[in-house]
Length: 363
Image (tube, rainbow, N blue to C red; front, top):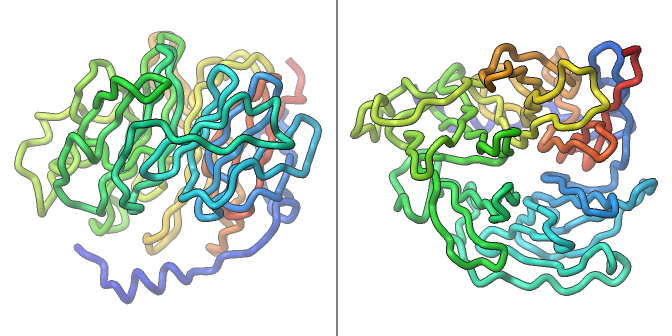
């Protein structure tokens, strides 16, 4: 059932606490043996994170138009680019920082040597659609050395050109030889590769089908060119009531259903050595949280445990507290990143903060 627009508007006005990172930190909960601390709360709309070879933390932003750089040991970041259009995505490759800005991918060359006098971002030749609806992009380089870029659907539910929208693409670092590798992907804002080099990605489900469907998806790309169902099928088993033309059996189903409206964004496999041994190979998922559900869900970081074959075995809450019992929202996790020392970094775009989770318990 479609939710009335007046109700949607009222839900958008649900209580939001404009706390800074220090205030939020006091409410965050981690498992026994772990500690969470604030790195910085001076990066408005902090989204995707990337680490440089010298330990610099780069952070993209949503709506602020800035890209930030935080040197090791600092709490005050530098703005290394500004005035960009939704520069959500950042990824570091061979000394250069790549930044997504809706229709273009920009590059800041040799960035860690020029943090105090950053170079002008230079666009790659590849161009993408200019729509801002699902137009922001999480980007990353894969183990094949190629740059992976998602292109969301320009709508909640529609049937756009599959070669230009609702897909995952990859290309060379110079922007050449671009190709679509996955179709039927409504809006992926997070992906990573497991130890075997297989790509896993989140996909946000459509709105206006009620509180409890469809689930957000965690997908795995086993073969280039697979179709994950949008707009015909959602979460592997829900034919779209408006646009379905092919049955759900025609598409690749999700590996895990993550829950409706949790807004699963950034994901990373844990490849560090600081956490206990049973965390090795786990997948951490940032749940940004619901915006149009009658009772809120998400607003946490989840841990997905995998067995030796890579099959998911269990989902557990790893960090929560951004969503209070009375429905007040203190922050919204957007991305996770494993630091060089094995700690886990978490960006929070509502508080403009990055937190670090480390293990301090007995082994």
